[in-house]
Length: 108
Length: 125
Image (cartoon, rainbow over all chains, first blue to last red; front, side, top):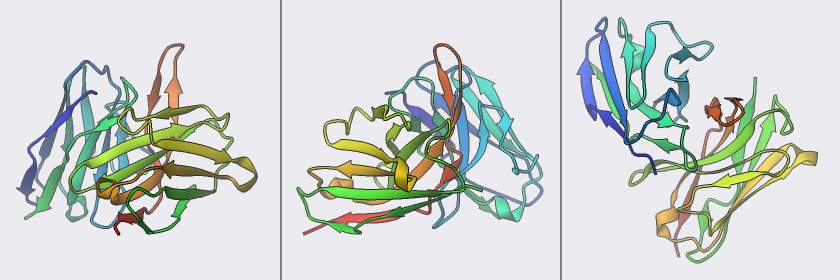
């Protein structure tokens, strides 16, 4: 299976900050990389697919980039609603689709 | 707007069979998309279980393949999960998910765009 490694595992940031989350795959996955946000007691919510395509309805302060094995999710001008856990997922070499272990973002 | 709702027993005995159903509203099970099951537990994080297309084509996680079956009921616009010979390690929150994608001649770029609220299943005697 392809292993997805996210860093950092957790971070705290202030409203208005720019934050960058990283995801690395153990093998080449082209741009077959999705990002999700999950809040406590809720299912994951798709933010970005194909590494950089914003899902409909997601604020433009979310930006995804990368290809191959290294990917980033940047949140510009962090908002209070952006707290939660962020997961990356690869859908290139399947089965199985695999997720990272998550980055938990706390708002200071 | 598509909505997915999981249902089934919340408690299963060890060595028993876990059975869940996902009811779809706002979309058709026969639309051009796959339908998946994903589970989440503190120990394993998010784990994809398998997927089905309305034609009956399936893919399963190799780690669960020997115990899993996913099926479609077009008349009820729903799909179902069966997991046999369960142990305490199968205790988790189970989600059904719509998984559309863009396909070339060789690959499909899949994403998980609509999730049910989740069904917590405990395996315990």
